[in-house]
Amino acid sequence: MKKLSLFSLLLCTVLFFAGCDKESDDPILPDTAAYRVDYSQSGDYEKFIKIITIGGGDFKVRGTGEAMPPVLFDGNLSETSYSFEADNVRELTIHAANEFSAVEEGPASMQMRFVIYKNGKQIDEKTFNYNEASGEKNEYLNYKAK
Image 1 (cartoon, rainbow, N blue to C red):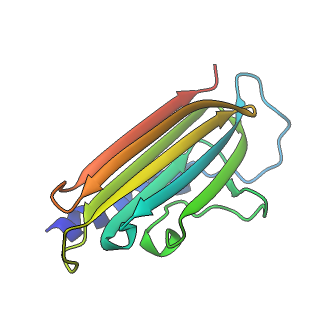
Image 2 (tube, one colour):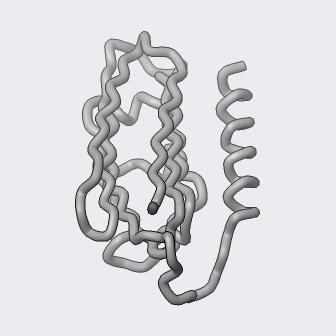
């Protein structure tokens, strides 16, 4: 039943962001900002099921220009840190879902850390802690350009 809820969330998120996709090199728009999201994870993160969405713009992997997947799932989150950036963002939204994997054994704990930059300046830093007893957790972050 837990897998069904995670996959339902994943499907809804993919459909939402696919409908919001905009593939053009528009000039900088008024009331928008350039955002960078640095994500890092530590601890026993491989024992947790993680789903992360970053929306509001055409986010790319920082340094490579490669398009960021609309949904970051366990297979996209095997490293300890990632950085994504986008221009012309009116509202940045981040949704992170996390749950201890039923096929793993505890004890286990992990941390998710998000550092948010707007127009090159750090505006926020959030750290979320989880363990095998945390259950399914959802975290939401939201930032407006103006």
